[in-house]
Length: 215
Image (tube, rainbow, N blue to C red; front, side):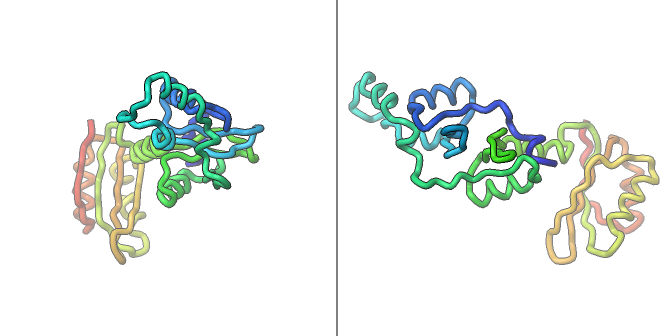
């Protein structure tokens, strides 16, 4: 799955000369928590709601409402952008898991997406979560089988072969190493009636950890 398939294309953008007040209002209107900063059609930074809150006066301030508004209007995005800021970006054709790794490594919740050097979207942690849900088929009826398999050659092929013998299609399959030589194998089947397939798997020596039927 590519980033372009999951990114948000309808961008809310600010410039270095946008006021903090306008940035706050834009976030509220568009229901977003981060804004790419563009200057002369070039991405120069990204600001988040956390960044804006840091430079906003505390509720305990003695300033009047008029002084507060003046301060928020006077302060510009360029006043809070770090100098020589390196913006973490990702290409539209990158795999979505690469976006997840970048977010984890840099502890950020969203990454601007580029194509041929141009800003074409933004991918956020919410997009990643939605993709993960779809990949696992969580929202669809069916049967989830959690198994433990070893690393012997043909183990996964044997499992899928048994499922096929029962005329059942596998919607999703995930293999995760849990320890040296052992893997968690998660199957999602397109049926809620997989009892006979489960019995066959057990009969062939496979360790079933859990079976969940989702209507």
